[in-house]
Length: 90
Image (cartoon, rainbow, N blue to C red; front, top):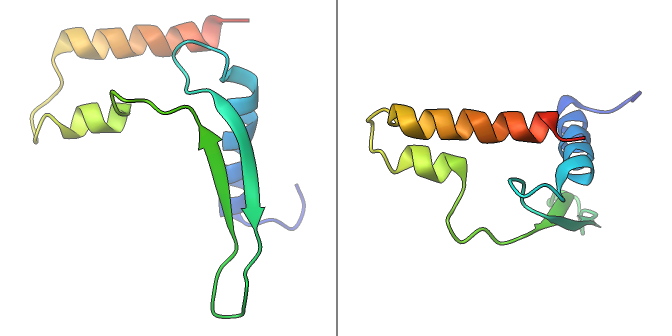
């Protein structure tokens, strides 16, 4: 990927991951992306990713809800197991 910024490379990796794994039960479904060029010099371009709505929130939301406490070991084990399932699924 020549001539792209670190942020652009990160977005490309994220979209590639979503394309590869979005059909997995533990990954939000990816429906597409919309690129919006900057309408003028004062504005920035942006990319919208369209994903499945997750009513339970994200892993970040779960961690944030502990209000500075550690996640219980059972939750950490569950999260680790489910992440491994994503990586082990063909």
